[in-house]
Image 1: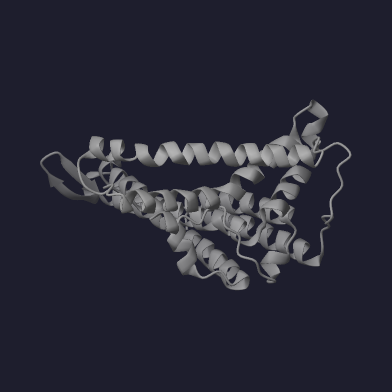
Image 2: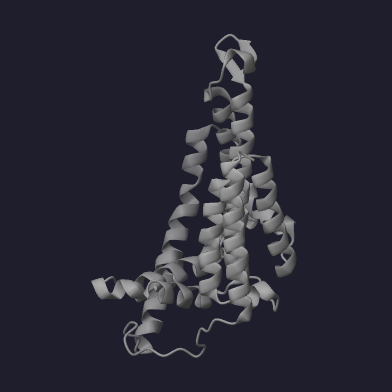
Length: 270
């Protein structure tokens, strides 16, 4: 299960999506999320699916990879769908099931389908950002976008750096957790049987060495930054400067068209 978590992983490539400026991809992700929440009917969700499929095809990221990242969250997604089915009320004409304390309306079924689909598309779309953007480029792009906040003394560089380090170390900590679990299983530990309390107690031999390893890595990183005379963002230069190119402006146009299409489709209830 841990190997299925792909958040924070970067798949190097030279595709048009990989070559986009990280600021462009950050803005487009926000546009994508807004467009997704504007979707109201099947036509709107179909447009979002086509857009996401095109991005995956251009970036050469297989749909299997995105679905693999969603797999650890499948329980939450199913639970969300079930709650929407039973807690969404409708009219008498749309009543489908009325048994004991359970009532299911057509509106509940439709709402559950759209909610599950929205969560799938939201996770898959946001994962594309980390799949096609390196942590360093993502940090630089976020810092440049938030630069105006420096005027009100917001520590933009420090915030961007912390987010970049967090994304960078997610795959590392997942790999470390998998190694610790394998070592504990070799010593006879059982993480799959017993009730909820027993399973929680069984996680203690994993959490303790994992926290020790995380603190050790943090200390090593802090020491390495200090040895390299790191002192924050003031006066700091970058090896790669960020510049917008023709592909970025074309991507902005596509994002604007997507947002406009979703507004029109929502107005007509499609």
